[in-house]
Image (cartoon, rainbow, N blue to C red; front, side):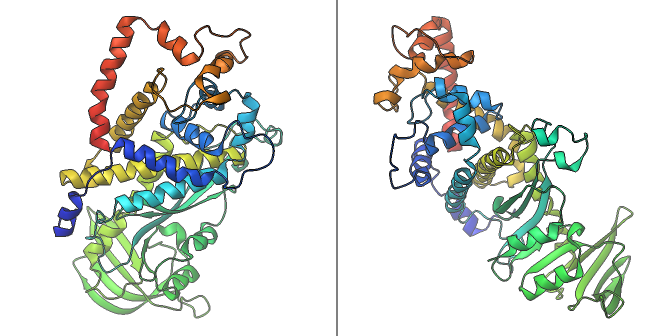
Length: 453
């Protein structure tokens, strides 16, 4: 990564504290709550409370829907005290929370865009407005829990949860546009066209040969979008002009298609070379070798792998493969939550790399996810102690939390705690040695929080 004067100035930008992050998330998330108050009894579990609970579960690997319900019943979440709701009420809210979680993801994405101003890697195709990787990923198969899936045989595509089509900003390491599709098997180019709407002219797209199509290439050229892709052996072509040839290297302008009926309307550039005895061939609509050299083509296409690593973060580290439900509405909630967390982790990776003057890929995303999850868990555990504040009074306050203690065994308790509140009971049940160990762990993890935020 090139560190010029712009990057040096960006590296000196003040980093937000954990308190500022919390305040921003809570303030921006208020947009998830309807402005107008509806008639009737106020909602026991608000949209903001639900979204924050889902995000906390996502930090811990999601687990199960039952775990989410127990968290609402037993523990305070941010400014919200425990609430007394049945498990089916949480399941019903999850089925309607996809829109709220997508709005939450868009808000966090906007905030991360502000934090990463000046930190993008401008050495990648400086002549392009943006450098975006285009790809899609198929979600894992779901269990045959629903009645319509019980007769489906294992391995059937109908068991696949869906697909993610996305554009990933290679310079900023951020998701730019994401669309979720319930159909796991479909023509990827049809959904990709929706992602192109509103893109700035001069944007450079990186995609693999799964998108190879002459009409698709022509459409991108007509939209004034640059692109780089791999060449497929079955694609026919005619050489129009050779720019360079020698020592196993070919750089030429070609027409795709040998017949007039199926020929592409615009010429493209073919480059090929051997590396370690293997032939590499690429196509691009950047015809000027002075603007884009052969070496830059290979280097830029290699960065297409960034989106594959981003999908890997979603599936392996954020546990998107462990789906709560086979219902498409609930699947979307998990995906948007994982994308929200991924935006934050990618942003922290870029910020830490800029502070230390290294490439973002030298910052381990594995350790980053582990450390942030541990720091968030330490902060979250501190809310369970009495006297920390944040919980509202009235029927939602901690003194009524004992009503949800039955969630541990799946039922409500018939007796009330003498001291009032699950938090106080659990705090009193700890031995002094346990209390000292917990306090020491919080002190040790405080420097992690300060360093990250």
